[in-house]
Length: 248
Image 1: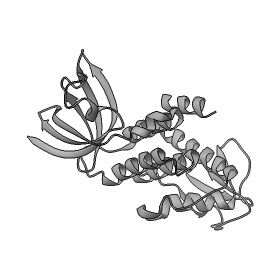
Image 2: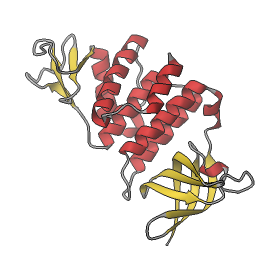
Image 3: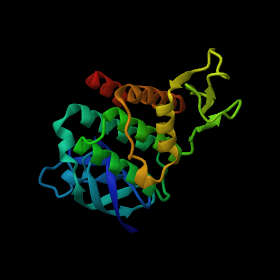
């Protein structure tokens, strides 16, 4: 069966001397894995279009147990990412977690839109990296069914307090009055950080990137979002370690 689609290459692996096995995030089929024969050959038309971080128009053949890419034409290669090692490493981290949480075989337009927006903002350098990282982590988890409950304090329903405490394992928040220090993992959130987190989770797609934070609040938000993602993933991605090493 022939399939025509558009997708972002979020993982690539060399197979043999000249073939590639790629993981592609598509709007209509979700995440799929496909072979691109002779794609490592620089003269092959599929060479650039099947590299990681390339958004491409794909013609695939769906066999019984695998996809074969017959034709691939690049739409956007996000070339500017390769000019900055920090942005490139963050983009690779985005690809790894998107591959982890995106579904297979179902409509995934929201996931693809999120990924493409992330790469667009990284290329332009128009959003601080820490802020962009938090947006992608929390919105991705929301799409995947892990939206935390941060409408109000889980104990007294208070909407805000001088500080709220994001309870990592319980995926909720406690106000200052209800929070008791203990073995449970938590991350402090000042009012600006809590407002930003709510905006990321609850805003319309078109507005999710439309806010700003001070550098200190970005750091606080980034600590909370990363801790929450790692608690669900239950491992630390190698791309995240590399990003921290580069960024620091």
